[in-house]
Image: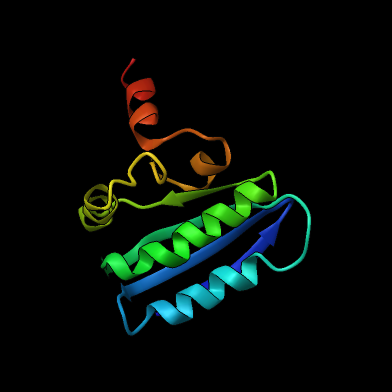
Length: 122
């Protein structure tokens, strides 16, 4: 795995790869916490495109990060493309909280994947 954080402008990005499960989520949760250090408005993109497997253990740290971002008048958006991530969010009833973004740029511009696909089709 190898999640890491980057900072540009006011946007912070946490990238994860490999498997996110009970054994690897603690490192992912630390990366999310590190990205939220400091004060002020927080805009956070979580890039899960490199994640090959993910289970429900990822939900607690993601929900905590999302709540913290909203409290700081910001947002958290998730980039993913694999069906497993969609399944985890849907099974937990959180697909509205974590809509799919295709790229970091789309997340930054708030263009969910379903809207981007519809816009490109017209």
